[in-house]
Amino acid sequence: MHKILLSLALCLFVAAASAQQQPDFSKVEIKVTKVAGTVYMLQGMGGNIGVSAGDDGILIVDDQYAPLADKIKAALKGITDKPVKFVLNTHWHFDHTGGNPYFGETAPIIAHENVRKRLQSGGNITFLKMEVPPASKAALPVVTFEDKVTVHFNGEDIRAIHFPKGHTDGDIVVFFPQSNVVHMGDDFFAGMFPFVDLESGGSVKGLIEDIAQIIPMLPPDVKVIPGHGPLATLDDLKKFEAMLRGASAAVAAAMKQGKTLDQMKQEKVLANFADWGKGFLNSDLFTEILYNDLSGKKTGAFLKHN
Ligand SMILES: [Zn+2]
Image 1 (cartoon, rainbow, N blue to C red):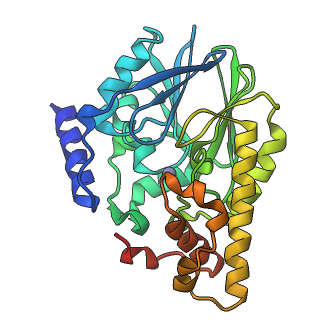
Image 2 (cartoon, rainbow, N blue to C red):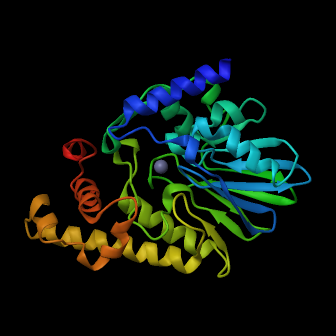
């Protein structure tokens, strides 16, 4: 009963908070992909879930939305009957942490300390027209860290490393060195412009610096799980970094010429990167994120959007 109420409350919250129609979770199917070694990827709605499955049980990286928890559990059962022993949150956003109250019932949730802080306080994601209320105690990470933590599990040294000021100020990247897999969280949107949450301490400049630091840490044949988008390669991550640098430079150059945001949109300053605008964000919205970031605005302008 408790679960049903919670789930209902969260559904209502999503419905109330979102300007769009509430997503129809009943139609969502969880797709399971074996990535390499002990690691799997689950895709449903929201952020991609990374899974380590083996003799020790299951560790999941992110848990999407609360109404999908039963489907996610069923998908995990298809991999192994063993229980979920650990949950890692890559950052605080609701499409990555919604299942926390469910998976946190039996497994400690581990995250960067800013994830717990932001879940505890709630906050605005103006870009999505959302006011996120403070999370329930059951949704909060119980183990937090500042820089890095290692979970020794399924013969793997699963390393979660915090990179400052990327997609938010609480993002971790999770390395599975023995399986040769990395889960980038929302520091990587595969093949599309990323949402960078300036209000939650994110920054495009910081994101570029983080990715430049991560790339040399990865073997050439590593499998890369992005926060959103299909399973990717190191080459895809390098292209993403190049796009971020190019797009950022294009907006910076236009700002130097004294152009307004509207002019930049009209003149399509990101025309060279048009293909990246077919996913989560179109070119205009990413231009706006870059403009706001480079001009030091952390909030506000997104409200005007549909
Ligand atoms: Zn996110």
